[in-house]
Amino acid sequence: MAVDLDKIASHYLALLTARRSRAILVPIIVIAVIFTLISITDRAYQQPSINIERASETEDITDWSKFAYIQYATSSEHLCNAVMLLQSLHHLKSRADRVLMYAAEMLPDPKDMDGGGSQEGELLVKVRDEYGVKLVPIQVQHGDTADDTRTDSYTKLLAFNQTQYERVIAIDSDTTLLKHVDELFHLPPCPIAMPRAYWLLGNDTTKETFASHFLVIQPDKYEFDRVQRAMKLAAADEYDMELSNKLYHDTAAVLPHWPYTMLSSELCETNHTLYLGPDAKEWDPAVVMSQVGTIRFSDYPVPKPCKYWTADDGQNFIRMEPKCEMKRRKHKNKEGGHDKEEDCSGRDAWRELYADFKARKAVSHQLSSNSFRCVIL
Image (cartoon, rainbow, N blue to C red; front, side, top):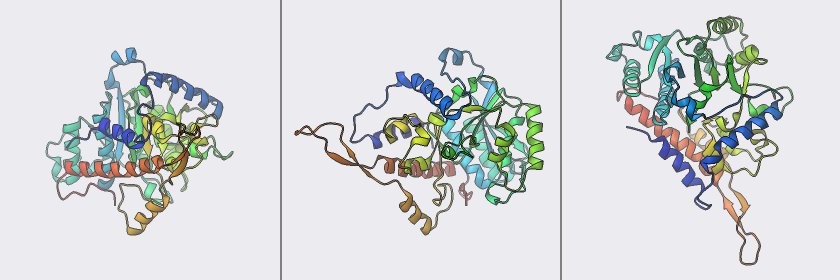
């Protein structure tokens, strides 16, 4: 069962603009917006940001086999999320390779034709054959960390070892992908490019922290050796984010977080200065949703939509959802003033993010056998 990501994106816009003007953003200004963002990023972070172009002439002659999106799966439960993101890349017509690094015991031989007799293996074979995903069996990188839910997060850093590619992009699988980001494969040479953890910008001690859920990596043996050494020496409270910052805090290229990535919790905020910058215009969920490339679920204590929800979790979902606001109408009334109307666009976008993820999770489940629960528990 195919998922039309273009329809999903269109659905978001239709939902959010029911009471607004039909046209929000003209595609011609996309490049200008990106360059404006880069300028804002330079001023805000006091570290040079990279120049990003959607250069169609370059893309026409690009050998896309030199680039790849990387996903990793450390367990059968984790596999479902990775499959969903790879499906999205397929439906968004990304031209780069798609690679899935998975725990080798799921399918020892990636060329196996029948899945090796396991349900996880059958799913791996299907995504390989139906979506052109390249399978790479790996040894899961366990960290001796305090949080069991993040103990395998080092595994994503094995992307540095995929030296068959000139550049790879690793996006955490608890993410909804609204656009592919193929243009980032054309960045200037750098070992790694990361966005700032923008939600930490308000704190002087953390404002220069990089986020690790969206990585643009140049695979390299020397860098991979550095990463491996750092893994072995990591403290119990150091995870992939801490490790990435320790290794590349002074050398990573700054990737503008907007419009490439956003946390779902941003829709719940009442002040969006950290995300859009101090000079940004009025927050408009419709505009943001039409431009952002990826949205990562992060609404604690609401569980991620890939997890099993209890009744209490459902109550937390209702309690945490964005509140409707009274906003002034743009058009004047007969008396020349401006009436107010209830604006629930942020709430509607947030609800739709969760509903969409759960709907696509059901589609991913259909890729597997009836008895395999393609869901994180």
